[in-house]
Length: 292
Image: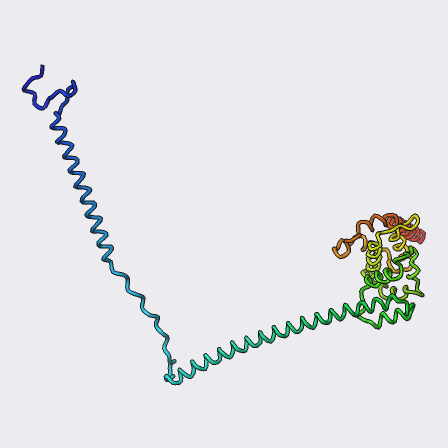
């Protein structure tokens, strides 16, 4: 039984509570009112801040740059103007002179390129005539050697001379003996171009390689044409030991066409050349030993 003197005690849903329904509702309303007041103040503060930001005045523009004084110490205004005008005129004249020099340089370069192209075209045309003249057989032996000397720097390379000669005279019936290399024919002229010149001697071999590649690297009897021609170049002193080694070791793109097949077809020749060198070294050693 509930004592009537106990104040604020009621039964809620069959249980006890320290506060009655009316007290609970009153406390909740108080908290809601406080929260509403806080939100209202925040909104007012935000509105005031927005108003202050909106009323903020923009910064004043920066002051214009201070122009340097027109006159120098001891100079009046008229003299200063004359000095400035002179400086501007000199700068303009310098710019115009530089532009003119650039235009003249460009024109000179274009003229030089045009002249070089014309000379190259004439040289190419002349080279064909010189190759044909060399291979035609009108001049042989010493006369041909003198003719080669007279052409000077216009004479085509040894590689081109040999290739053109073989193409004109050996294409249908190539000979491994290379009779054309005899001194009474083309040998004297070629020897005058390759003697004591390792690079020129290698060019003889490159010309032969190029020719054999153009005719499909044929075989005559039991020997490949390129190997027979290499042997003949050695016999005619148009390519010595070091020249063959230089040819074999060359890996340039200019001579790569047909090089692999040429190497295979000349293996026997290089084996013989290596054995010959070994025998020469042995003979030299024996001669030196006998001296002691």
